[in-house]
Image 1 (cartoon, one colour):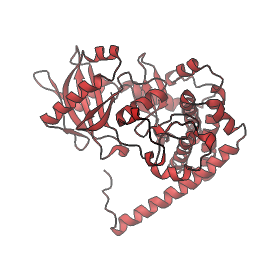
Image 2: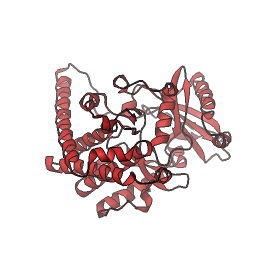
Image 3: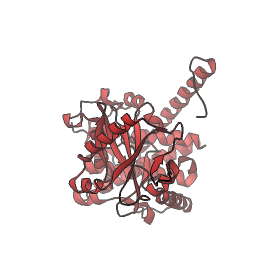
Length: 389
C-alpha cells in the first residue's frame, strides 16, 4: 500500500482508522484544519495562499486530512453562528473543491503541477467567481501580510541602544530574555543549521551575524516545547533577518502508523521535508538543527506571512474559503500522490461529499459535548484553569 504524509488530532485517528486502501495512496498534507491555511511571500515578493504549520506532518492516508479539514469547518461554523444546514453546505463545498481539483490535476504534467501556486494578490483563483465580500477579505489579508516584514517586526520586539546595537526587549509572557550560556548554544545550533541549506543559501546566510536571541512562546499547539527567536543583521542595521528556532516533537499520530523511514528520525528534518514537498512556494531558509539533544527546525519569522481570520467569515465568504481550502489541499496531495487514484475513489457524484458532511456534523456535536464536560470539571474544581490569558 502506498503511503503519504498527513497530520491532525490524536482523537481524530480512531474515527478515521477505517479508511479504505484507496485512501492511502501517497499524498503528503499537513495539519489541515481551517486556520492552517495562510499567506506567504515568495522570493519574487508575490503573495501566495498555501498550507501552513507542518509540525505534525507524517506518513499516512490522505482521507484523514480531508476529514480533518471538514471537521474544523463544521466547528468553525458553529463558532461563527452558522446553522446545521449552512455548516453542511460549507463542508460539502470544501469536499467538492477538493474533488474538482484532484480530478483536474490528474492530467496535468508533473513539472507543471509542481510549478502551480495560488497568487492571491492577483486574485486569480482558478475558474471561480469570487463574491465581493471574499475579494475584500483577501485584499485586506494580503495588505496585512505585505506589512509583515522583518523591518516592521524589529521595532516591535527590539530596542536600539545609544551605541546603535539592537537588543530584544522582554515582553512577558511571549518574549523572554535568556542567559548567555543558552544564547551561545542556540548560536552553535544555527551554525549547524546552516549546513542543511543549499550551498548558495549558506553563502547568503554567512553574510549575516547573530545580534541577539530570546525565548518566544509559539502557538497553542506548541505550548511546552522550546522555541527561540534569533535576530541577525547583515550589511545594514535596519535590515534584519529573524529566524525562529522551534523544537520538533514526534507527531501525535505516530503510534497509529507504520514507522517512518530512518532518514526522518530527526523530527526537524521530517518537518522541513514535509513542508518542502507540500508547499508550492516554500521558505528558502528552511532547515533543521539540534540543541541539547533535542531536534529543532529553523524558518524565517514574519516575512510577508498572513492569514484569513476565521472570525471574518460568514455567508458567502465562509463557503468560498471552505471551497478554496479544499482546492489547495488537493493540489498539495496531487504533488506527492496519484491524483488519478484519489479522483477515481471520490467519483463524480456528491455521495462522498454528503458522507463527510454528516461525519463532520457528528464530530462537531462530540466537540461540544467534550467542551461542556471540561467546563463542568472546571466549575466543580476538578480541573484548574486560568482564563482570559
